[in-house]
Length: 164
Image (tube, rainbow, N blue to C red; front, top):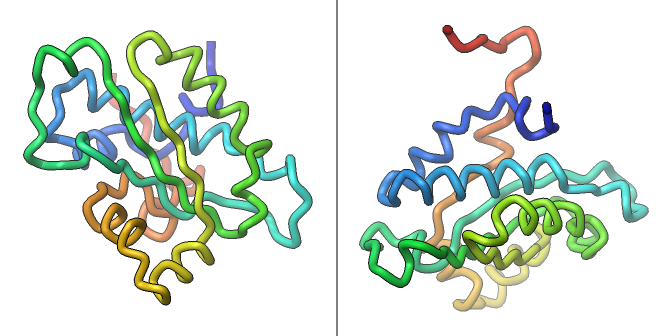
């Protein structure tokens, strides 16, 4: 069965390399969650003056720390925190994210908990202007898993098929 996120041209190894300090299973979980968020973001659920897009996906919290280590408590169950930045405040609406949350829960729910916070680019600009250390410190300490300006998908003609 092919799902929208399985055909995403964004190489999974790119995300996994950004969390190379984690064990392989957790790298795969982080990559899968990132892919689901990107594929099942539904900006058409709100009426906005522009098409919506995700500009950034960030892993926040203990799994973003390079000093993180595996222990008995975290070996079997992961508690991830993802922050997503979208290009317009209307796309922070829960309706845009419900399907992505449902799919993450159904595919990874018994192995991990995923906390998802959605911010708009204007929220981040305001945080910078107000020097909101809560948000700015977490973004600075987090790992950017996807950035639209850097990680834009390839054009269909630029795809390279994997070797068999």
